Length: 258
Ligand code: DAK
Image (cartoon, rainbow, N blue to C red; front, side, top):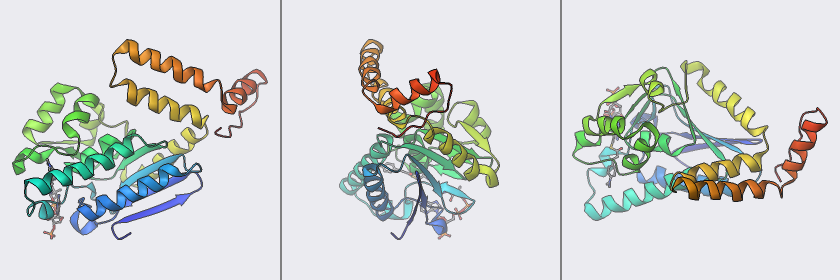
């Protein structure tokens, strides 16, 4: 892979978007590489957490590659949006928990990539924005759909209609990121969070992710019914037996993710 670095260490995979000369902008090749990395990781039972970050200290991802998009016609633009949307949907629906470690600019497609992740941690210098209207287009990689679901439609409309950036503290205030850290602490904190989540009963973490993601597209009653079914499914797992036995026996559980 030319534009991605993929490192797997035990239960943790780290994907670094690696085009720092272009502030890690997503061109077609990078999206194709991301698609293939996500497909491979999704099949792996040993990997529980994926951290996505950008190379360097300036940018997470500064958007889709404007220089590449400049040459596209309408049909090619639609193809690019479809490719990115399918990659981001696979990230959103991965069996693993995906943490975005946003280490700088997360603009346009970069903000949309972070939105597709389960949890967003930001460095203090991070900046988020959907500047597409300044280029005469609209967000095309899911931003008009995911941003309002996360920060509410009023704040999402303000960000998308103005194209203005918000800094890390404002992103935290509006619920766009879960936490903000100094740049040099970001990866350590992301790894600590990964460690904590991976120590839980991982089948249940994964089912909880499914319940939340699918439930967001249902009415509340259908969502609760769906939750009850997945709750019931947990009772068929070894992790449920181990978790409850450990509680009763006053010891730490030893989950085996099955
Ligand atoms: N694409 C390509 N190159 C980029 C880039 C990008 N998004 N962002 C930065 N670069 C490149 C710069 O051109 C520059 O390259 P050289 O000139 O050195 O060759 C290098 O990275 C360093 O950038 P700057 O010199 O500009 O660095 P500064 O610190 O001065 O400024 C900046 C940093 C992040 C504020 C600035 O680079 C910037 O504003 N970048 C563009 C951010 C942006 O507008 N992102 C959103 C892109 S649009 C679709 C609809 C919409 C979309 C896609 C599909 N469909 C419906 C089909 C749109 C998606 C987007 O993401």
